[in-house]
Length: 338
Image (tube, rainbow, N blue to C red; front, top):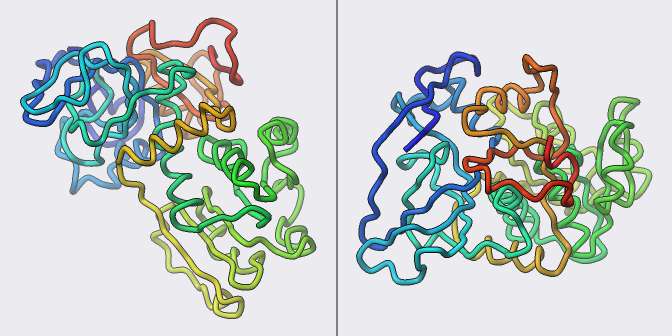
């Protein structure tokens, strides 16, 4: 099977190599999936750079999102049959990743793919959707009528968070550049603040503060969260922050903090699927590249420019491992066939 293998830590253009590896075989309770599509996440960038080199032995196949088709089952794996379309999050740092034509996974982690999503769309929703569900629903417990501040509403995680918070019935405030205001409003944001034009904090405080802050950015965003929190507000960060944080101001508003590193599981996928089926959630696919375009996908996600002049798009960067995993021409989401 074809894979894109991480052969060295470092820059995107030198870190990967196309290789042929044996097709994996499913063990007890496992299924073999033909990977139709995967996607690229910030976790992949960190892994490639060497941030987790103690947990990744080179050469390695990385990646965690899968939308695909079952092609084989192991002993005792009777919940799925060959031909079933599935989606799932592969366990992080636990065996072969998803930059590959085939992948083996425990059936307990797998759900049936929503029929209304193409494989590319489904792969673009797996990790980010599960992360947002865990952050907003399981950790922050967002309720209808609360005010939620989503940092980076035009990004891969932010675009899902804006939709999900709105589906819950929350008032959604998000930060985005002026050029993205119409886009995030279309996703359901009630108020959009141009973070590049001035300080967002006074504007949020003038509204009465946020009941929940979702930090998708890192850097100083976590430190400044108490400035915009309403009393007894909650902060959820999905960004690892190695620098020490002074959170003394959080004490003054009785804040609660949650730090999310999402875990795989069927229940979150099924919850996402219900929102998709209700028309309340749709992945935003900004670019679709082939399997051998993994280096270019990493460059785009890092904010760089590829050799053909492309720059980072809105939403997610998906990888169509097999061409038929791509959505139909002209169907739906922003930049889907970019």
